[in-house]
Amino acid sequence: MTERTTLDAYLTAWAGADATRGAVSETIHALMGACTTIADIVGHGALEGAMGAATEATNAGGDSQKALDLRTHDIVVAALKDTPVARIGSEEADDEVVFDDARPLVVATDPLDGSSNIETNVSIGTLFGILPNTGEASFLQPGSKQLAAGFVVYGPATVLVLTVGAGTQVFTLERDSGDYVLTDADVAIARETKEYAINASNQRHWDAAVQGYVMDCLAGVEGPREKNFNMRWVGSLVADVFRILVRGGVYLYPGDDRSGYAQGRLRLVYECNPIAFVCEQAGGAATTGTERVLDVIPASLHVRSPLVAGSAEEVERVTQYYAEPPRRSPLFAKRGLFLA
Ligand SMILES: O=P(O)(O)OC[C@H]1O[C@](O)(COP(=O)(O)O)[C@@H](O)[C@@H]1O
Ligand SMILES: [Mg+2]
Ligand SMILES: [Mg+2]
Image (cartoon, rainbow, N blue to C red; front, side, top):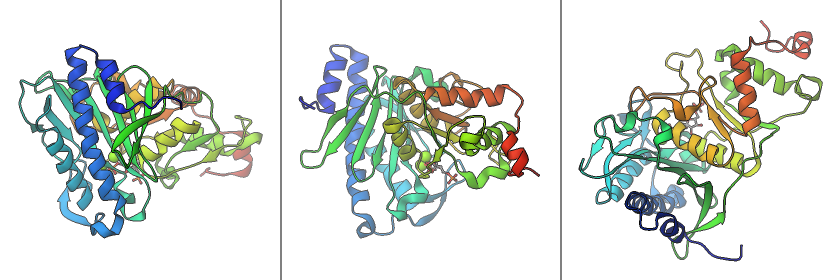
């Protein structure tokens, strides 16, 4: 990269004299202050104490909250207190945090994504979506109304994946200066892929469409896809999607027949929508299986949604399994895999 572009320079150029864009820029700047603090905490690992320890508390989704879930929520809230943000909708608070409804924006956030990976020294992250403040129903706007969205991955490097609706950009935290430096401009997700990501331990609970899709991937060159697939599953949405931005792939968290999982595990407003916006702006796609994620009207702040996101052709292919009656590949019929 010949020219060094910082996040602040990028946002200043994008915002120009536009007041709304200025407010969005200020909000992203404040969010990144929080994320740098979180990156520092995460980077200390066990020296910070038991970050992955379960607390007594549970969130609206029924997950038991870890110490770092609560700490990161507090850090994000504190960082946005004196910004253009009127309200925060966070995974870790049942109710919205309301600052001042005269302000123009609201922020939806999953302050700590990948909670089950905290203790394992595997990448975790923070997701956010910024919406116009429309009052009490602000978080019930579809994801297509997001003014900006993205996520930070706390991995070997701390990276910010950001879209302000003008492509998807990757910035890397330069630890010495504290700057987020543009390291991959206008990311393009490969349209085709031979790699998928799904929690295969739930296979017996999947619907027929996902059963059929994965079965045909597993059939490899001898199957209907006529190519061998690889599988990767980090178990942190942010890390799995970052890999997809880098080398293509598709992430699936479908609904399944476990109790409470009819709409999958992920939350629409602060997980699926930011991912969908980032993927679409990188030339990829995101669907529930039957509907574009960004078109879904959220029933509530914490509502769940199935998610299939990543390489455009592969996402489209998954939607075909939902649209057409599932079939069994001859290979699987012969070998009896997955069959009752
Ligand atoms: O291991 P599971 O239960 O299938 O769920 C994994 C998924 O759940 C999540 O951890 C949900 O996010 P949280 O950690 O914010 O609850 C995703 O990051 C991940 O992809
Ligand atoms: Mg999450
Ligand atoms: Mg979380």
